[in-house]
Image 1 (spheres, helix red, strand yellow):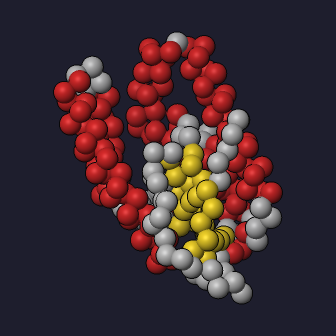
Image 2 (tube, helix red, strand yellow; image 1 turned 30 degrees about the horizontal axis):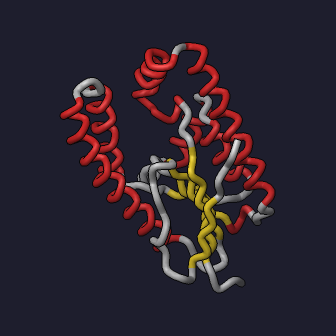
Image 3 (tube, helix red, strand yellow; image 1 turned 180 degrees about the horizontal axis):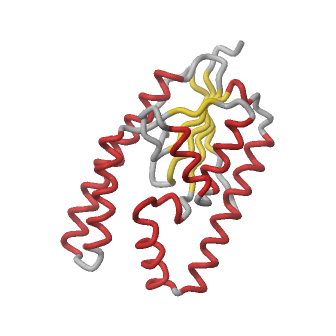
Length: 196
């Protein structure tokens, strides 16, 4: 068995479904900003991105029974599989991919603090409301950086506590997050960058 723990860090793009209760508002905001046609093109590009993620992960030829799946936005709550199933059923390519790996034997892990996720949801609502107010957005952006750092810290701690030697973690995490330099030397961290 390997002495190291492997972590595949997958910087991701969230689909509209992944925005949960804010999905319709975010979708409409995209239409207002770039138009309906460009919004549809963006949604198609996001789907293509997820197809490429699946291809590149399969190319790693990992033993799914030795894989732990970590997903940003997925709270540590005891209902992780149910949340993934609901989002997959609503069309999230990210969560469909999680389901495929789970069906092959991978273990789904709750990844984030529920309290911090609620703070993030509140921040997103306030940011959508204040989008035209530059002063309010400056304050919100400072708050967002601190919230992101806190969320990243919780995710790192979760991985450190749950990923065993000889296992591989796959961390699906938004592109604004960073895992660089956060893990001890016995973690082999590989960033999987998808180029379309």
